[in-house]
Amino acid sequence: MSSAVDFESPPADVRDAAAPRRGDSVRTLLRGVGQTLITIGLVALLFVVYELYVTDLLAAREQDRLSEQIQEQWADLPPADAPTVAPPAGSATPGADPAPPAPESIQVGLGDPVAVLHIPRLGADYERVVVEGTAQVQLAQGPGHYLDTAMPGQEGNFAVAGHRVGRGSPFLDLDRMRPGDAVVVETASTWYVYRVLGDPATGDFGADPSGIPGRAVVDPAAVDVIAAVPGRATAGPTEGAYLTLTTCHPKYSAAQRLVVHARLDGAPVSKAAAPDGPPALAG
Image (cartoon, rainbow, N blue to C red; front, top):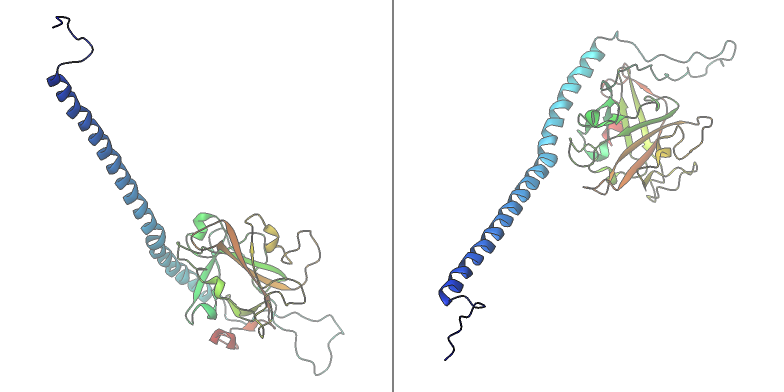
């Protein structure tokens, strides 16, 4: 029998005591990780609820406020037809129809209401107040008018951005738009009817002779979609009055932009002549 002391192996009772301590440490670590993941999940869930539902409620409240504000502003204006364009002296033809109303001048500050957007395809009661500017603070209130683009009815491109999801989701169903659909823009004294480009008979968004598609999905950097003539990257003479709506694509993502182009259809309609709106409001 050897009388040497075994320094390599601790007594059995010491080994048995160390094992539970190591097990407790592992369990504590796993418990901490699990609690952290649960906390992160709850925070993420609350954020999603806020983005999808709370911001919609806040935006709806802002839209109510803006609607009251713009109606009060319009009520303070003197009742009158939209101004007409006077033909050059000596150019009038006897018996000819008078010149159609011209778009009124709209002067607004950043964040102020510009016009009211009606899109029958998205619901008989669909209407959103458009504010000036497309920064997040403006888009949190509703659709925003791109600075330095045309005003309603003017030659050029009246371009408007809006959130697809959250902040009121004004353009949630913009992908439902079809060629020929009406987009009616209401101002203080006038209704402007735009029609989505394309062939209503076939549903082909690319059938317009101008070459401008009625609907497209583009990269966020494709700023030419809000040019005076949509898609024309270089400056040139303005040809026609257009409307462009932009939003994120696909839903729940900002990877791309969904774009809808429309063109002014016919002459502006005076509110004095049609206080309840043009027939296009019925869809």
